[in-house]
Length: 508
Image 1 (cartoon, rainbow, N blue to C red):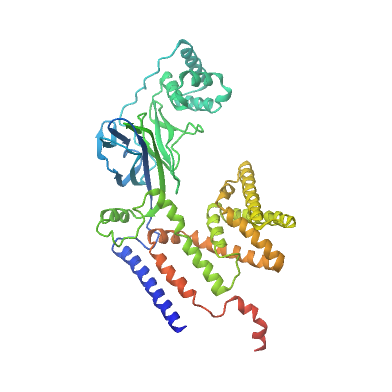
Image 2 (image 1 turned 180 degrees about the horizontal axis):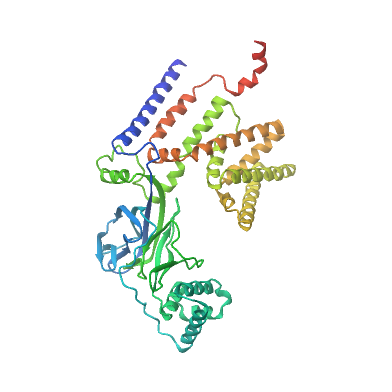
């Protein structure tokens, strides 16, 4: 017994010291701050270009973001994956080019950039305003263009109001015969049809291709805005809603109608983007990039991973912190919970749905699930069939909640899918059995304990400082492991036992 305690003590202390040592090393030597008040939001954007082989040599050209969009480029990385690689700069901008003589298997190349926003103001395009080339129109098309543009000119007072009316017509295109005729006869798509109409009206315009920045997004594609010249300055419009002005958190990739991706010698090509947001001092990001080779063996940062995996780890690294909260509340406080991991999963779901909405969803699903489970218990079903039935019921409930929340405009409830379906179903099954064996009081004790622990874990996980430490110093998880090992050897009184033995205390 003594040897076991000594062994655990030695292992735990070693883990704690090792984790803290790595953390101090990264803070002192690599410059990562421990205090999250010196921050600049830094976005890591990774483009993933995938394609399949075709006949002949392969050449892949990807347009790179310029420096005229209000964002500063900290660094960029390219993955060639056996291809020849060059960066070309010409009057059209910067392009990454991958080349290979032969290609036998599907291939993927990456481009990753780290940027931060300097200003919301866009610099004017380097080229002077010019009208794009107009399509060769048939007589009927020309009449439709002239009628459509003339009608909007009569209703507008300037170029900006003309563009607003034009976009509104396209947004209600299902009831506009002219819009339908233009789209069906030109076969150029909505954006190009709008550009052709603007050209016909004598208004210089070009598309803006960019990315809507949202932390953790994966497999995102480029969105398109329109930039028109009103005679004095360039103005941005959103063709999806007709609003003017550059949307917040929109990163411009290309300000022209040129193709972002060109693949020769390949087929079924596509480009997808993954995003992750981190708050870091600029000097830290630059220092890490410059010293990555020197400190590669000891730097446990996950910034070297693809952005898609970074977004996944950003959430996974919070789970050990939630586990620490669960262990503390069960070992030292003495709260009973419905399983060990249920409070952790609830806490993670609450982060996505917000606290009050998440609790309401959980109580509603579990409450209705228990009622339906009580009905199933009278049918004498096998355990597997009963649990499977509850799983289906839970999924249907979540679908109903999502649809109703969408109709009512409660956006937070749309994240109901973040609740673990199988765990919810099993929790309903366990609570139902507990109700039959121990009574409703024990269900309330364990269910209430699970919610209390989940809320406390949510408060900890939602703290920006905790997120900063876990993501930038993942070696602290080694320290957490040591602390949890020490907690596992505790056999003393729990705080809840002060209430349990209150009568004995009075007698003393």
